[in-house]
Image (cartoon, rainbow, N blue to C red; front, side):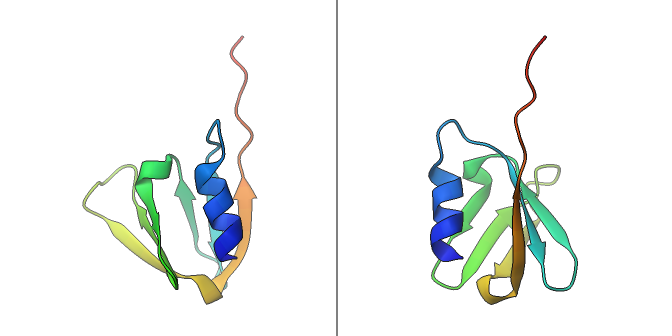
Amino acid sequence: MHQQIKSLLRYQPFMPFTVVMSNGSSHTVRHPENALLSKHFLYVVDADDAEQVTNLYLLHIAELKTTAPTEAR
């Protein structure tokens, strides 16, 4: 899981992704600067509230969902 998240955070151009936890909660990473990956945790800053940081334990991540970018018309 650690390597998958690391790849998502480094992917160019960046694509937002959602982390789904084992308890059903989900957290969206909209920009790579809004997340910090450590050995056992992913820290995600809430895009709407910069003071809100969520600590996500990697062993409890159930799924990673990428969001395809929308094309400009």
